[in-house]
Image (cartoon, rainbow, N blue to C red; front, top):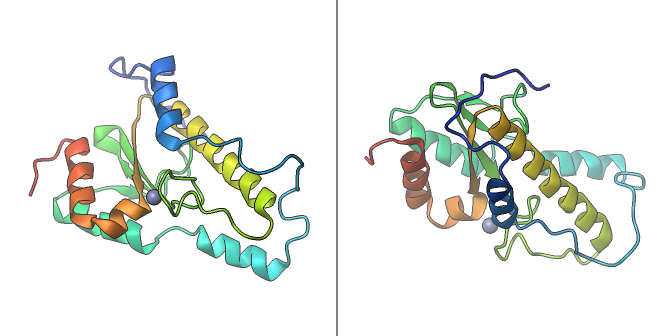
Length: 178
Ligand SMILES: [Zn+2]
């Protein structure tokens, strides 16, 4: 699934500084919940599985808001690149840059939505979300190793202040503010 992309020397690929920053950024939480392990999906009815898949689907409203805002600033991008680690939501090939739009709950954001503990099956969700965060860290590390810059946009930021979040993203991409 990983495509070979020429490395750039500008990126401090895989440095511990980058990694620890990513971890802080993503708020890796492996300490949620009690001891014990529930295997994912084992006892989840099919309907609920489909529902969960839907929740995680691409093209969410916050993602569309960001896409629209960046497009309006003249930015062009590929979507949901399955050939790159973590399947980034937006890919800017000429800038060697990708953007992920992360749902706060799934990716355990430090905001109030990201720290919600479900009333039922708390351990199940904790394990699942911890795995998601680990995958995020791995994907960002792999992208960095391949010379890609990565930026994570949180859904809550888009919901609470879309304009500013779009500006921040455009700035990060190196585009003059509109
Ligand atoms: Zn959030």
